[in-house]
Image 1 (cartoon, one colour):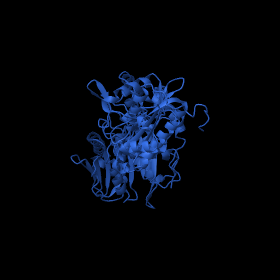
Image 2 (cartoon, helix red, strand yellow; image 1 turned 90 degrees about the vertical axis):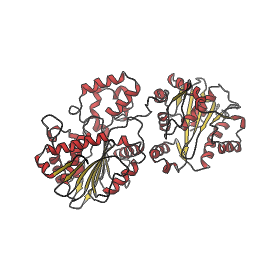
Image 3 (tube, rainbow, N blue to C red; image 1 turned 60 degrees about the vertical axis):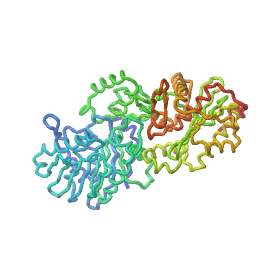
Image 4 (cartoon, one colour; image 1 turned 90 degrees about the horizontal axis):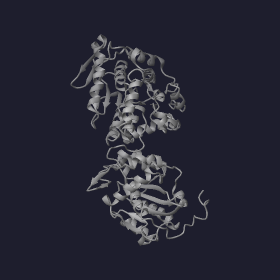
Length: 562
């Protein structure tokens, strides 16, 4: 098994070097493929230049490793999957069409199928037109291949194989023998709940042929990564960074054009055009710096949402918080107020009083809790959150499983069955109560729906009934929306910087009912916001300026927590 990691990728991308590690490729196969690919002509460019002259070196390297990882004498493919993530404008679709034609020419299997999967009809049309155009530009290829425009199919007359360009569909496979597949713009399929199932079908079809390969080409998502895109991207990064060396997994080669973390975290760095060439390997060919700079400044004039979308698409900046126009305005300031050191213990240690919010629904929902504290002396608000999920949600909500597993790894979410989820949640409440930080009454705000089990457990554990306050939802939480927006914008609220909460904040959608804004689970769709609603509940109670009923046992011992 080859080591496909590239732990020095940050140095490589800063210095404009290849992101593909040194590999013991089959030189004969690799060079043959590069020679074939190089002779293909761009069909929609003046004079129809050959790829050898027009294509960026980064894709030539990809062609070399895709075909050089196949050893026909032993019928062994050393790399089964390839994951290439590049910004818009890098000619991914055009070059990929050329790679598919190259694969058809290199193919030795008769009556087999190559599959190009596009997320939209427009992309499918474009991909087919590029491939068909390359064939039409060559008299030799026109004798070998027959194009069927109405079916978006290219037939190899020499061995009966076919290249099919299809728009994404659950029933995309028809039982054909599959030797090559490409999925373009995977990020656009991330929200489709069937994507994982379809990818499993494609991989299953490729397993029938030892030479079978799967190639993903994609741009970063213009929203928070979700679903199959998030899962595949997460795996690609772990392989690249060397975290999967000792694991037995399907071999994947990641080629990820993204900024090193120190640049990606600072807008003044990633927005500097001097750094853009790091993530734009086709700069000077299909995209040009002057026009990009003009476009960037135009988007800046439109507002933060447009800036984030532009940065995600042109610079592969991963979105941390949602950017939809109907989103909660507090999201604009959310990331600036993060403090990853703010644990529950820190909130308890630093607070003079705390309130707690709890929100949850059915078994396919999250059960969220928020502990909100008012800091001694500064009177800033400190917010900590946690969520619980029933393990059955992994089957019910496959589209968000990757997100939930990330939150579990972060420590912000716990998978727990009924009734263990409620017991664990009440453990948190008891910890704050025993610290003496809750007010005498109305210290625990809770959604009055579906709460019987929570109320019973709170009372059983000795939490006084007068502490529990049943808060109406919907427009009744409007003061919390306004209140948190203001405290985030003026810097008087600090939260723990959890990716769980980044996700929930990004999922939040706002509508106006009467004269009041409202965030509900219904208008936020299938995405989850329960921990955020729990924070709104805690906000309402803390905004009433309560005083702690019992003196905190932690006030006299700042070193009690390690």
